[in-house]
Length: 258
Image (cartoon, rainbow, N blue to C red):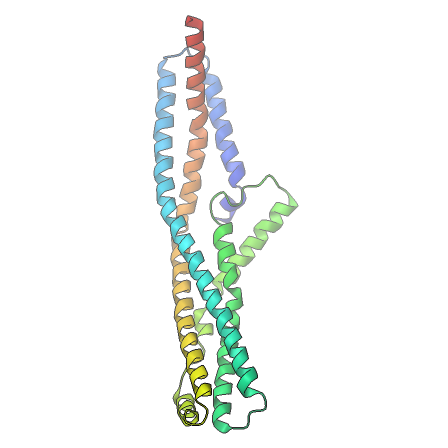
């Protein structure tokens, strides 16, 4: 997979060059010859296969786009939770001495620490885009291309190492925090209310990140379709010169008759 992602352009150009070489041999045949009919059939068959594979790969691309939207949502939820948790600590926890309030502050600290892993979420977008077919096509070869490929492989390894189990470290609510929130409700209802909102946001965030990881693993398991898409493009690149050659030969024969 890594080799194909790195040398996509070279593979396509090689297939096209082989097709051009084959057409040069066929130019010895006159228009209407069986060889040109076979060349046209080759174009129809390979072009049809390429179109079919492109349709199937389009479904994979749609799934990747859906993953991107889920990443945006999970990352936005993470940023919102971190901001709300920071305001909670700044508003209620600075210099707090109430034992019940300290229990809630401690829980918020734990929840904030567990969301730190979500700083890796933008990597999902970059990796899913960089390993897609044709994403690596560039006229920049040599050392710079090698660095780009190595960086892409490093990102894949980093994302694969992302474990939802390390994120879901703490329960949003437990017996201690429930009792503390209940004790604070009569005297400081705003504290209990803000904590419950944060706990609920954390639970939603956990569910969203879990779904995100499942989607990523599904795409990884079906990533072979990207290889088949590139193979189909290579077949079309190989067959295109034959169709072009047939048209040129027929045009030349038509001009001679005129």
